[in-house]
Image 1 (cartoon, rainbow, N blue to C red):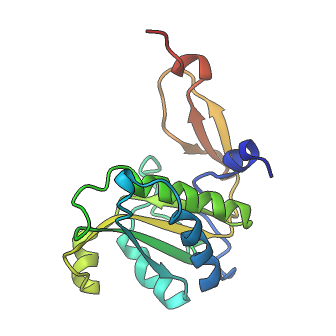
Image 2 (tube, one colour):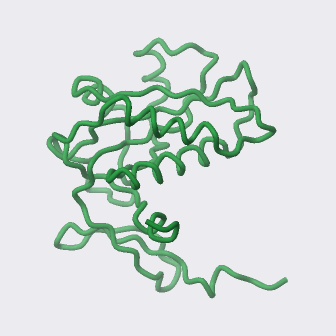
Length: 190
C-alpha cells in the first residue's frame, strides 16, 4: 500500500469486531515503530501501557468518552468494542513538556494498525483522575492519550466541507461521515 492509500485508510474507527483479538506481539510491533518516530529534542519521554484481554478492555472502556459530536451515542455497544488499547503516558521525570510527541506516536501507531488490517481511534476524552486513582498510576506519569484498536466494522466516508461545519455525523446506514476542508481553502498566500 502506498503512503497516500495508507493515510486515506487510516481513519478514526469507533466500532469493531470485538471478537477479533489483538495479541501482545502485534501491539508491541506498533510501539516499536512509534519509538523510532520524531521526538522533541529527542527526549523520548513517552511510555506505553498495553491492554488486550477481554477483561482489561472491559475495565478500560468506562473511562473513555466517544465521539463528542454524536451526542446521542454513548460509544460502541458490546460486541463492537475495541479488542485492544494502548495508553500513551508522558514520563515527567524526563520532561514536563510533551509537545506533540504523543500525536506523532499515535498517528504512527494508527498507520501501523491500518497496514496490519486493523484500525483505531485516538481518545483524549479520558476520566484521568478516576483512572489514576483506580489504577494507582504513579504521579510521575501524565495520561496523554488512549488509542482504541480493533478490526473495524464501520464505513468511514470523507466528505468535503460545505460552509464551516466540521462536525462528523452518521447516516441512516450507520456510515460515519467526516467532513474535511478543501485543499484550496487551507493553502494560503502571505
